Structures are given as structure tokens and as C-alpha cells.
Length: 208
Image (cartoon, rainbow, N blue to C red; front, side, top):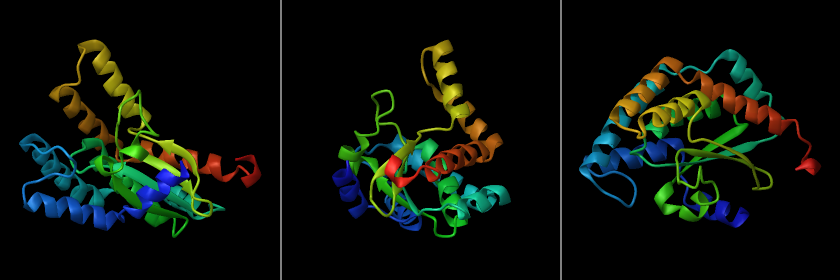
């Protein structure tokens, strides 16, 4: 696994670099990823607007900030994403704000899924290449310690329940999901990621 992570990190981007790649492609009416379609480009445009809004409105609570700054070790969050992914657009700004709030304890790096399928296939969700996927890496050793995604629990439950009832994930389900994110304001994601970080940070190196 370390080799796959090292390979992906070589092709990784900082959060601002990732945003610029998506924006520059949209100027050519393209999306990231191997597949190109009008639908995916439209999703990317929509996501660009969402991310711009979230970057202005999202807040990391003082309590979460304090706990992130108090982590004993240094970590890397390696996130698998694509510009057309609605969940990634809602969650990447949260990841970025948390990494900034940690004041150096967490470094955020982003890779594109279709360029890193070897890595993606190590972190499947129900046998699918669902994104975003956040991989927690010990910065000192380069080893993967845990992973999170593609959605916080409340959002996952919403989609699973909808699918159970209607048999499909249609546009109505996607709208309901975006409304869930809007009302949640990134709080569930912050809490889940913080719990994961604190659990890992309390484990001694020799126990891993």
C-alpha cells in the first residue's frame, strides 16, 4: 500500500492547485476525469459555485480547532476526488478549513480518481469507486492509518433509505442530499473526522 500512496502523492495537488485545475478546465468547458460529457461539465460548474460559497461561509468551531492543534503527531490527509462529484464539492472545503485550523498538524493533498485507480481500488466502498475518499496517513512513516468517506453518516443514511424506498438514486435524491449538506453546515463531517483523528492520535506507534 505504501508504494501506491507514494505514487499518488507524487501526482497530488494542494487544495488551491486542485481548485485551479478544475477552474481552468471549466474555461474550456471540460471536467476532470477520463469521461467527458455535457452533464459532467454542468455538475462541475455547479460544484464550482458551491465551493466558492462554502469557502466563504464554512466555520470550524473553536473546540474543533483547539483539538486539531493539540494532536501529538503530524498527519497527511490524502483525498481522492474529481471536479464533477457533488459530495466532493461539499466536503473538500470542510477538509481544507480543518487542515488550516490544525496549524500544521494536518497537511491536505488531493489526487484525481481517474489518474490514481491503483490507489482508489484499495479504498472501495461496497465494491465501488465512490469519492471523495480521505486517507489518513502518518506523515513520519507514510503509512495509511484509517480512511473516511465518501459521505458523513447522515448523508449516507439519507441516500441508502431513499434507494431502499425508490430503488434508484435520481435527481430528487441528489437534491435532498444537497439540502442535507446545506442544513448540516459541515458539522457532521468535522465531528466524524475529529473523532477519527483523536482515536488514532491516542494509539502508540508500536500498537499500529
